[in-house]
Length: 343
Length: 158
Image 1 (spheres, rainbow over the protein chains, first blue to last red):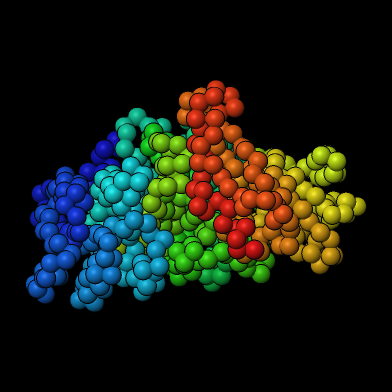
Image 2: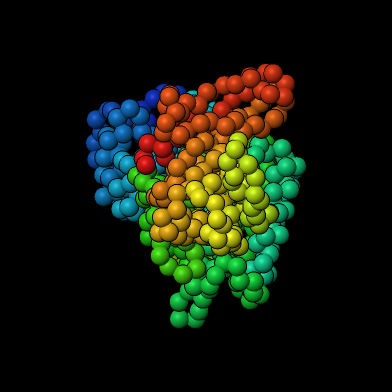
């Protein structure tokens, strides 16, 4: 069932054309193999090589750009591609998304997807996690963005999926999650990051996501201690699982009220390495996204405005807490229109 | 999940309050503010996790302590507190941090260990975190679980 979830490209359709701009043969081979397995037609462009404007023709389905020792050149290419094709799906492979150089592209909406090169599959080595690459590219090529199962590699993995009907259920879900983390032998240093992330995502989904009919926040001003019933649309869905490589966690609401501006504002502090400051507002402290951005190996925002927000957090657990901290961080921000087309 | 609590104890000859549990929106710092201890010495060894609402409560607490002109001394800051100190501006206010707990993990026997690292400014040597130590349980080498280049960064920012 899980495998079917990742085999989403229809092979009877024309093969998606993907341009891969790379700085090293090893990454090129890695990316080519992964994209080839998806049925993509891969064209290559060494980043350092001169290229004609024809290389950047608009018929490509996806552009995958790797940053090497000279990231400015790769990022200039990203800027040129987005200048010619503002809606072209663009994915950058970089050591870590929390790099100041990427900030401009993230802030300018050119870039929404950064896969960590020194990624969790082998922390410290210049490799990427091909599962992450395939899942991200598939989502970009098919507009099918929601669901935790896409990120879990093994058939047979059990996904726990509680639903919250009251604000007070948050505590129960966190207790169950902590128990699950002990069952899968998650080391305490990582378990603490997982529970903290779940708590922040749940608070966002319960208190910040719900909107009144006029679009105004419904519960954002409320004290987080308040225990109230959630209306049917306000119910929050949680999923978590472990496939041996990652603890995977997702939290969904039915409002899709999280904006790209809010995501970027909180991530910017993290990317610039600035300490966060607490917002002087009632209700939440305004620290949640900043806090979890420091803790998560791969952070995925899936938003269909007015319909649904799903935040997925993956924590690399295979090689213990040290490797978890050393692994590069990946970021994906998927927004679709209300009709489900990727924006 | 355990709500924050505290108990009176001794650290050497000095009276202190040991803080334990999770610092969340339910954390009540009023009894700590009312404590007669001067300086107010908090042992943070038993603190579990802290969420963003807990950060708000903690920041209010350290601000009130500072406003009252009471010195605050922190002992054995748990990793959750160290992470926040590295992330949140003025998280520790004017507190004097005498030691932190450094997390270690032993791959041989699956033991998670917290080692106290002195950080007081009057220490002869600057605080240093060993990348490896012998495991107190099995004697094999255990590894520091975090990034030593980042873990004590908050001390330099103060």
